[in-house]
Image 1: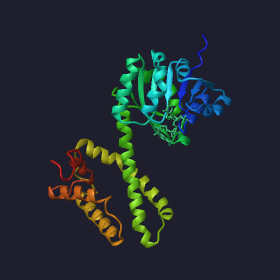
Image 2 (image 1 turned 120 degrees about the vertical axis):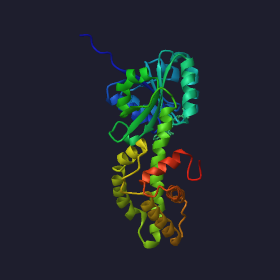
Image 3 (image 1 turned 180 degrees about the horizontal axis):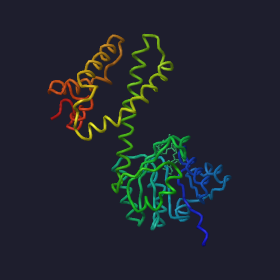
Image 4 (image 1 turned 180 degrees about the vertical axis):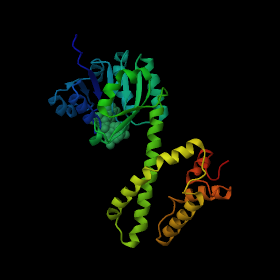
Length: 296
Ligand SMILES: NC(=O)c1ccc[n+]([C@@H]2O[C@H](COP(=O)([O-])OP(=O)(O)OC[C@H]3O[C@@H](n4cnc5c(N)ncnc54)[C@H](OP(=O)(O)O)[C@@H]3O)[C@@H](O)[C@H]2O)c1
């Protein structure tokens, strides 16, 4: 049997995310060519067996897959500009955060140079690259995703969201939005608890335990919102309206801003006024997708 060729990858950008990504490819047995604007950052990886490229063009020439965990899409364009001629037939994986529109523009720039493009969003921290905790989102060329999936999974479990290059960034923002709501809720609660003498550090383990339980509630919420059927739930609009009202009153008494939960209260009030007080809490989805409590 012929020996399998050693898999190759080029990593452009050896910052906080790029360095562990290059290290993960080395650990997985890839011939890993690295390039960084500030060349000194490549030294620890070269010591571990990486091949140093003097220019981005040299890195691009090293193999079929070019992974770019650079600062932003502007940096990707600046780094790859002088290397553009070498991109033909390569797959460019942009891992820099950006807007969906920037991802689409980069995809069309790459296509103009004969390259396949995948846009990636890294739901990970430097220390969770190549662990079970991190995961990456991708969109763009489905052929490129299928062809390079094994390599992509070296960095993190890979989720693909379709051919629109902007889709990974849209899902990235959706996940960030989910997290921001929970984390801002925690910070608000910590402020409310301060006058009662409970510190944020004391409250954090309890909040984490509660959030783990809340996460288990997501499939039910998703089923109700996905099928637009809100009857028979145990946690109704009116029940949660009273709870959120209590929270807002408590905020006022503690001298804490009610900005976090005011919009939710407005949604619940609107649902109740529309005769949906006995529907499940998840039915606020109907107002959100119609533009909000004041919408329609
Ligand atoms: N850090 C995190 O926890 C985290 C988590 C998820 C996603 N992200 C996203 O991952 C991307 C990389 O983040 P990071 O934390 O690794 O950033 P970082 O540590 O600041 O590294 C940025 C990288 O981009 C390079 N760079 C910046 N401007 C450049 C330019 N004009 N031309 C060429 N290279 C340029 C830097 O090169 P030099 O070394 O020469 O400066 C460095 O390699 C960002 O889009 C970030 O939002 C980060």
